Length: 209
Image (cartoon, rainbow, N blue to C red; front, side, top):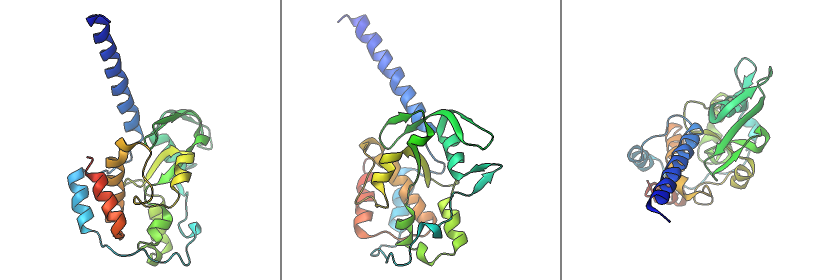
């Protein structure tokens, strides 16, 4: 392979990498702290065993709520995190592209995309949300101001379920730093606790930053 061919190949790879990063950035929710801030927030979280799931129901976290016009929270995040998203009069996405940073997949159908609660509703319940009012739980479940909602591949979100980082991490290890920063910040913002294994997993993930 000639030097010119190698140089051209390197340039193409560089452009692809740059475009990939730009696409991934479209799927990044707001308010993600720096690694330094996340470590500080993690150290400030209360460490205790998970609480009981008694009384838990997703219905106690009303979602998706109307955000603007005909658009609910899911539709708002799909438009925020997608590229070239077109919607109909009901605000349903009819076309677009969605990059899932959890697994690196790109989808062209909104039906292949879930809106993940970074800190799952059940995980919030067992770490403090069981004592919240319904209004507080609704605000948490529809939070567009913090890194709590993100568009990702549906079956990846379903595999995650209500697991915390000691039991589940995004398939792409390169996203672990960002994921830990998001998770930690949400727990800190809402004064939710962490269990010891969860804290150790988050600390290890932040070490990748």
